[in-house]
Amino acid sequence: MTTATASETLGFQAEVKQLLHLMIHSLYSNREIFLRELISNASDAADKLRFEAIADEKLLEDDAEFSIRIDVDPEARTLGITDNGIGMTRDEVIEQLGTIARSGTGDYLKAMSADSKKDANLIGQFGVGFYSAFIVAEKVEVFTRRAGTPASEGVHWISDGDGEFTVAPLDRAERGTTVLLHLREDAAEFTDDFRLRNLVSKYSDHIAFPVEMKAASVPVDEETEDEAEAVTEYERVNTAKALWTRPRGDITDEEYGEFYKHISHDFHGPLLWSHNRVEGKREYTGLLYLPAKPPFDLWNRESPRGLKLYVQRVFIMDEAEQFLPLYLRFVRGIIDSNDLSLNVSRELLQQDATVEAIKGALTKRVLDMLGKLASGEDDKYQNFWDEFGRVIKEGPAEDLANGEKIANLLRFASTHTGNEKQNQSLADYVSRMKEGQEKIYYVTADSHKSASASPHLEVFNKKGIEVLLLSDPIDEWVMGHLREFDGKELRDIRRGELDLGDKDDEEKKGAGRR
Image (cartoon, rainbow, N blue to C red):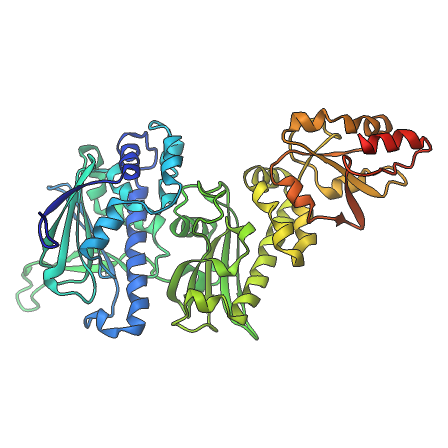
């Protein structure tokens, strides 16, 4: 029988085994992103300790300067990433490195194929970027101790990704975590100093903590000018300034793109972003991103969502869902407020007037971003709609205050185009309305084919009156909340009598009752 202090070998959760299989066997076209993921995790660990230390300063253990260090040994072909952040207990190591807590992950993975580049690009979305280490490593070790625990409660985790891992006790004086990668033979390039510095600059320059690497200096004896023994020191290789605190004009599109990947774990770049600072009655900075591709759990309304919340540049929490409505759950970004308390909780956020005001402003910003995209870049917006349209359709029922803005974003199939592509706006429909037509007509069905074949369309087709064809499961619910647009009533042609402005009263009444 094992105890909490004994060495123990355990099996990975089934979903983790599938992920590891993808990591090891997928044709991964961009292996270098493992470094970004591991540095990002180290940054999160430092953020979490800095937050917990607000309530308990002793957790800092007389070391309040956070940093992330990269060490390499080309001969041993190892790469180590060390942080002095929050660290982990034995139970946390087993839970965080052996299981995936995201609901729906298992079902999603069953549909993934092991040889698809697309599949590998989704790994970060599960919140388990740690496993990207196995893209380049044949074995991974983790040495960790949670801040505030005795040195004797360190933990050593080791696995070669074959389905099992071993945890063992460890004496570790330093708090925090070291991830040590034993690199594959074909990944030896990642022990090259110049290569790593370039990767840090490319992917992690925006990390708010110093990322350091060794710099060998050779001091000289001033009297004899003889070279003394070389002394190894660490030097910072990133800018180490929170990106959202910098002026927009100083930030390149590439930097915005990499920061998005850092906070979202999305391997695709963002579609669009908005960065602004609000001053006056309320002071906050917001950096919001629209993704180009949906996360795997987009359709699960219970999945974790929300923005990263900072207060006065101190990290408070991930997935602060109180700042955006549920129908905008795909938006990623950060909010940094000067008005909230550092010890704010999720419960307090739900009751805070400042949060409600910020939510209203951020919601309008997102809708304005989408509105500008829809009016200026049709193809780009159509691609967005094809990916996220069904979520936007939740808006009319959830956000009455912004009903008009949301209505302008909606897209539908129509008898005007004769195909099932949802690419017609309500404004498009209104612009084509017949003289004297006062209503916007639509029909709902369980498929586009059924909607197109509806017998109720016959009289409308004869008269050349356009009808919107709605076949998404959510459409009937949407139309129950979207009653009018531009002063025109939206009318289901299957219900009630229809006034089509025709003298043949029997024909139109018959169409309405059919």
